[in-house]
Length: 126
Length: 111
Image (tube, rainbow over all chains, first blue to last red; front, side, top):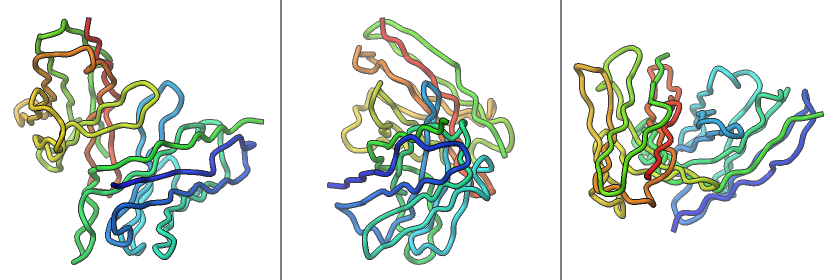
């Protein structure tokens, strides 16, 4: 069965960096686009970023553009989110999510998140 | 970019039917598929409706989705309400800038 396991969360000071990881299993990771979605405490869901199945295309929410970088290593079945210049408003549970549509044949991500991880909490505080 | 607007909360009694709306602020609701996610406290979201009106396997047919071009909105309808349906529900789509968009979420109370 599909499993997504995030790691790397914790407490980080404002202005510092943190890298999150998401290890995937149960499906052909190299075939699917992948997303990061976050949820601030007591708030709603916010889409953060997407990477295409082959890593060639990346798109970001305006709130993180220029500060966050999404990447993947298909040899390790792992998705990453490098977060720089962190702010208090980046405090959230970060989920990785699998895109529904396989990306082969040039099909773009569908932005339907059919599987989600359990999330990892990032707290930005001094 | 567009916004998806949902009611903050809805409530209904067990056995009844409830509908949650999701209104798109600009461009046609039919431009991009809408998904609906259920999130229970302390859990990750799960899909109840994808591609406007499709149910993933395992989701009961008490859950249905639709879109209405006249109101430029999507709707999630849950019939035969059960206490286990009490959760937060989010609609979601994406825009022409390749950015995902979520509604603000609706808290469903079954009382």
